[in-house]
Length: 54
Image 1: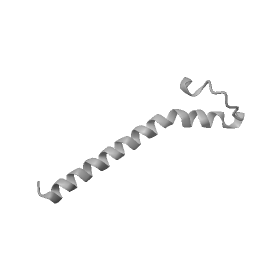
Image 2: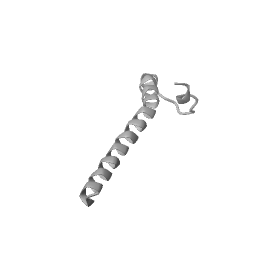
Image 3: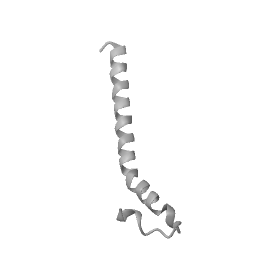
Image 4: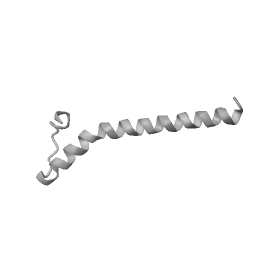
């Protein structure tokens, strides 16, 4: 959580926990999106190879 701190932006106190949570979950969301994209391209490659008859 320390990577989210240190910005000079003033945040209302009611939103602080939500923003910290979103900041810390961002890495997981990027990783999940990358794995989903990898699976999609892998599936498209298999379909293309099957279409060519390889």
